[in-house]
Amino acid sequence: MARTAWDLVWILLWQDRGADALAVAEQAERVVPDEATRERARVLAIVGACCGWLGDYATFLQRSTEAHVIAQRLADQHPLGQVLALQTNMYWNFLKVRQTVDAGRDGVEASRAAGDVWDLASTLTIQGFGLGFSGAPEEARRAADEAEQLAVRVGYDGAAANAGAVRTMATAMLSGELGAVERSARSIVDIFGRAGPWSFSGLILISMSRFWKGAWDEADRNPDEALALEPPEVWREWARGWRFVLQAYRGNRTWLDQYRHRHDLLFREGRTPFGDDAWFVIEAVEALAGLGERGEAHRLYSAILALMLMRDGFIANIGGPSEMCAGLTASAGAQWDSAELHFDTALRQAHDFPSKIGQPEVRRWYAWMLLDRDAPGDRDKARTFLGEAIELYQAIGMPKHVEIAERMLEAPRS
Image: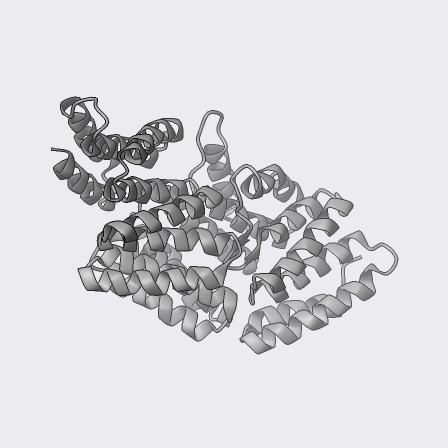
């Protein structure tokens, strides 16, 4: 019963049928004896995962911990690897980056020892996301490469596509080679085209690569295509937030009412944040700052700090360090000392990780802050940053961003 429920729950979650998956898991929980067995560990793990999928982090953590304790006591690597595979996935859904990495490493070790290729491929891919977003893109790429080989071997399309997403992120961070980024993103669409709405992630990454390459008209189409696929609610805000960025760079303010509506829904009292909230917040910060909506951008300062601190290690994203966004939101509220500290940290991290796209982006936004503050020496420092940013944008191939930085040089704000 436990094994059948386990397999069925995975299938239902891939179909974004969380309520149906929970019903199966809870039925199995009622049937399987409350004893320290591998069957009990599996059942508790799937109940926890289904609750997590539906947004109940507390119950996920409780059930998952109980399952983990049983699996460890059994000294059996197979159920331990299975429990940790689900834990890793759910931690990532809530963007608990440090826990994703830690549970992923333990899960990879257990599944490797058990010879469980399926769960090993799954855990490696999700661990790869955590590694990338904790500022370790080279480790993330290695995890993706191994995961893809294993996934292809056993016919696990979902893990293969997720490995492609990790590789896309790592490529953007490590090389900034936008052609490779788009090719990698297209492979996600090709694979996930066989797995329902999940190809949305590839569409967003394609849009990002096109945006950076200056093909803004082409980039505009992908977020709507992604949302039309009705991706899982847990990740929908990523597409919405990215659409806001694209609109803002065109100077389109019509999306602001939509943004405020989404903001009020996401930050309503008692709601547990999902992983995609992070993308929405980070993207909204850039969009709001670009439109000069300082008050709205500054309102997100505490949310950005929570992503980096309370959300356990979210220090990087595909477009640059999270500290850059913190600097933007602090600047918007004229908290100059905090903003400068955030930007200095972001500049260092963009080279340490590295984050090739983040390197010019941090410089451009740091200059934006300096021109706004306009203290003695700020304009000269801003001009230096903008000149460096232009050279880096040109090397990557981001012509629209070159134009933006050049306009800032020509017409600094008073």
